[in-house]
Amino acid sequence: MAALKCGSRPPWVGLGAAVWVQIAAGNAYNFPLYSHSLKSVLGFNQRQLTLLGVANDIGENVGLLPGLVCNKFPPWVVLLVGAFACFFGYGLLWLALSQTVLSLPYWVLWFGLCIATNSSAWFTTAVLVTNMRNFPLSRGTVAGILKGYGGLSAAVYTEVYSVLLNDSSPRLLLFLALGIPAICLMMMSFVRPCTPASGDDSSESRHFLFIQAASIVLGIYVLTTTVLDDVLTLSAPIAYSFLVVMVLLLMAPLAIPVKMTFYPSNRSKSDNGNAGKIEPLLEPSSSAANLDESDGVSEVDMLLAEGEGAIKKKRRPRRGEDFTFGEALVKADFWLLFLVYFVGVGSGVTVLNNLAQIGIAQYMHDTKVLLSLFSFCNFVGRLGGGVISEYLVRFVFV
Image 1 (cartoon, rainbow, N blue to C red):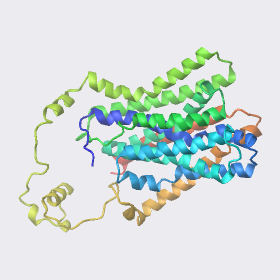
Image 2 (image 1 turned 90 degrees about the vertical axis):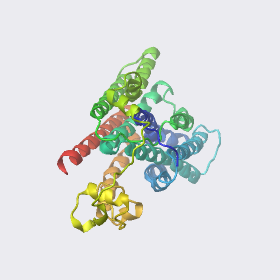
Image 3 (image 1 turned 90 degrees about the horizontal axis):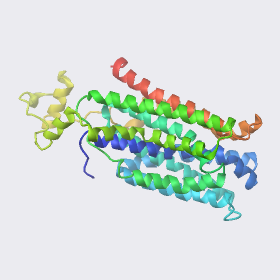
Image 4 (image 1 turned 180 degrees about the vertical axis):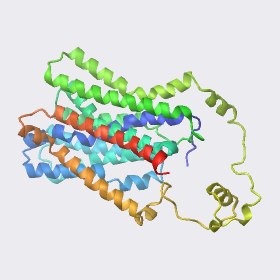
């Protein structure tokens, strides 16, 4: 197992890098931007296009294998597999749509799209699991932030599609095949397990609040600039200026580790001063030898007794603790969450897959505004869900 980085700064560096990986993980939301080109260039009918949308959904949401791999290998391995899947799948679609290779079978494109969007599951699993372990006291907040950036990624891709790629579907697929793996390779060394901060850190809530505010500003900004680009005819310098500002807003979470580097807090200095001292993790307890789970002792005493070897009997994990996959399968909570996710996400991806056709039916042949609006609402729901869940866990269900 790789050595853990310690200190207050490395987890925030990993979180800032995870934001970029989550933007890359939103590549499956781009289907409405090139689905109409698949239909017109390759001659697919609506039924074939709908089946490609199914491949898009299957690839994005089947994450069992990434989850198993994430528990056995470091995050960089998971990200590397996702980068390869992205390169192979979208590269295959680009070859077909650009007509570099003619007459590729339909089933090859179906599996290629499934593999391409499955990179989303690998990327999301790597950054979510790693960062939730790095911030064990703020798991809901971290999940909401990262999933929120993932939902906002469609609006970010729309801006890139409009300004850099000149609304070209083949260029978009080439960007997805080359650009996303490049981003993940650059961020790979920063997304890694770190030693969580011990105890509550008063500045942690302020840092999370800053990232949440920066993500909200980014969402409003991208939605506004997309609408302006659709309504007005913007010159190239202005369009590129909008793109530069968007990139700077995406880099906002990295301001926290930069601030920690140049303006370390007093707590960080004291932690660094005590870093060289080696102390035992557990102090011997005189009463630990006679403890048993049925005695009604406190949870802290029970943990001390287990650490000293006084208690050998293993107990099942309680709600809120880490479960193995086999332990989760026999819990009603797991299947309830699975049902809610299946029903809730299913309605959203159905709308997303047919967003281009919905726009055409409403005489909107340019789906950029619709996709950007969908992405913004998706972002608000994800970020709000993380904030509300953290509030309920901390202050209501205690």
